[in-house]
Length: 188
Image (cartoon, rainbow, N blue to C red; front, side, top):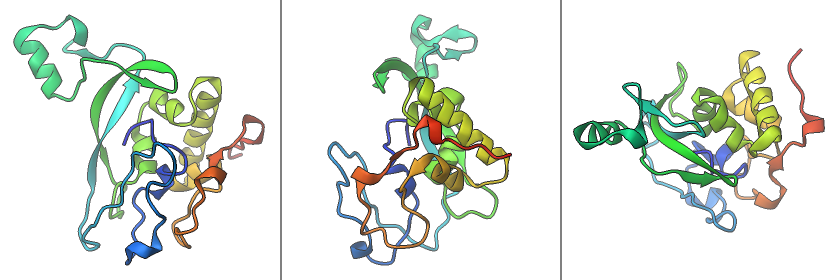
């Protein structure tokens, strides 16, 4: 769970099927980092960890991570902060690990939940980065505030994304894309 996941794979997160043959062939697309995993369908997974990003330096006890030394630096890194930056959508950003929780009554945390609980910058990076990503992220947040689930809000922003029900075997990653800015809609 990080902002580098593509719009084709993000909606697939949390999808459960009885047979492997009901899922698409993996990798779904070129440079795909995703995997299909075997789970116990009766087991709850109400917490997952994901990576939030920010162009601003994260701080630990009021100090920037890159200025920490010794035991303090070790404590910050063991708390989930990364000392190095990563490139996302062409920009070098700082990272930290965060805990994301399932919504009440939900069995598993999905990528949509991760997005809904992430900071604005992480959301904008997922939705393409730059001004367009920021606009799509604002659209996504507006749909969540209006009462849509995070998966439903993602569906308002991603064209041809896989749905909760229906055949996943036929997902064509080439047809899944972010909605152009002129087509964004916000709840009234």
